[in-house]
Amino acid sequence: MGQAHFITFSCYKNRRLLSRDRCKELVVEVLASQLAQRQGLCLGFVVMPDHVHALLYFAHPEQIADFMQQWKRLSSHQIKKYLTEHAPTYWQKEYADDPVWQHRYYCFEVIGPRKAGKKLEYMHQNPVRAGLVNKPVDWAHSSARCYLCGQAVGVKIEWPGEEFLAPAAHR
Image (cartoon, rainbow, N blue to C red; front, side):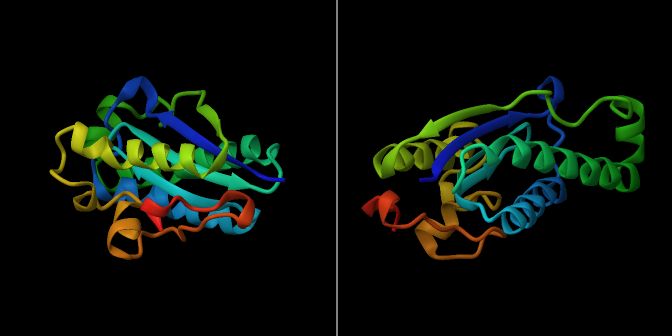
């Protein structure tokens, strides 16, 4: 049986390298493409200016390490390319020799829909707690708009089968 993982990873030295919307979009685009390639599911996510949270599900729990390596590697490459082309003074002066991401990521195994619902609530409230928006649906780089308004968010948001039903508050 598969397993859901609550993932957190941060920009190198907690820099706000994802402050530009396009950088956040690149993270989401790579997430979507890697999930499609690896038959993973995204239950939710939020991309903040300096870190990322995601609730992911894989049929085989050992898939998460390779998935994370590729997500971080590919998004790092695309973010560096974008910043070199569109913010060369900022990027070259400050960060050109540094990685985009901290070396590690944090992974917490999530058992069942109740715990998953709590993690979703935590993620979706991140931009509100940071003072970036007043309501979770106002943050464009999150799955909150999918859950609360039914809007597309760049990644297909779906729940695993019957063994891991979505909590009623997030259906």
